[in-house]
Length: 256
Ligand code: CO8
Image 1 (cartoon, helix red, strand yellow):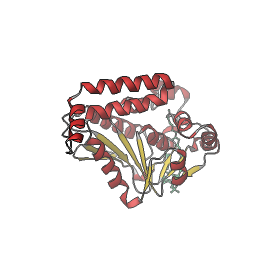
Image 2 (cartoon, helix red, strand yellow):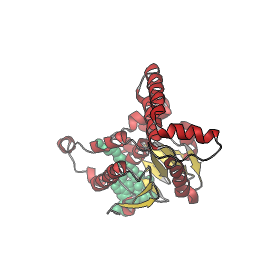
Image 3 (spheres, helix red, strand yellow):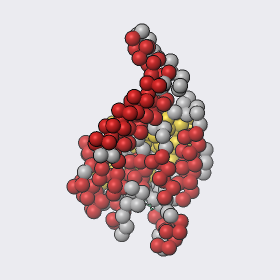
Image 4 (spheres, helix red, strand yellow):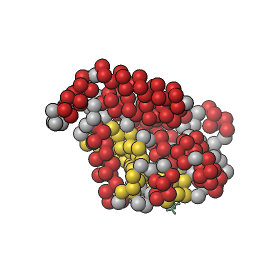
């Protein structure tokens, strides 16, 4: 538990709840620091295999904290390298799931898109409304949204600032599954537990190769995938997984 987060451990799964209700979970410097610190500790804790980031039933996060930013100058933003530390999200090797209910706007939408899987409740709404404030996305929104939904829809979102409901967000590729609001955290935890039960090094490799698809030309990506696939044959867990399948039993993975 920190001032801006509620943190629980569920076996090998870390559940992080953004908790600034009075500001609709707006991301200020403190929340950013505490969230990234918690995720950095998650990454190095061998007992933890998967993380879930969620908000409240009303809001995932309503963006970067406008009250924090309103008085800043360009010199302040450059000197602080404002929110550049969120690059950590691209370097985390373990899977992180966003469980989104309510508003995921601006930096909140960008935070969700930094996660590996977005599971959303029926009331989830996604948007990049920064244009209405006279600014632009600043935590990767113009880039990740465009890769996820294509140019026309990304332009529509970024230039009009309109929100997508969850059905549109799922159809467009931001959301992986829609679940009832009351079951959101439970479903996200179940997905995380499922991942946490897989061979850990294979999980890292699978995440790495899907991410490579976002960055690499196809031929290089396919070669990268094949080489990683080949390398998994060095692992005891690979032999165990295949042997257990043939012996019709559950595999016992050791992370080796
Ligand atoms: N920042 C600060 N405070 C906020 C924010 C925010 N982003 N969003 C809501 N709040 C506060 C409100 O000011 C209000 O506080 P108070 O009670 O003191 O007046 C409280 O939360 C409740 O908000 P509302 O009364 O507005 O609640 P509603 O239910 O009527 O509306 C909305 C909910 C639709 C979510 C509405 O609050 C809203 O539109 N919020 C702003 C959304 C927005 O514009 N987000 C983008 C912010 S900019 C951004 O994210 C840039 C990211 C990149 C930065 C990286 C830099 C490098």
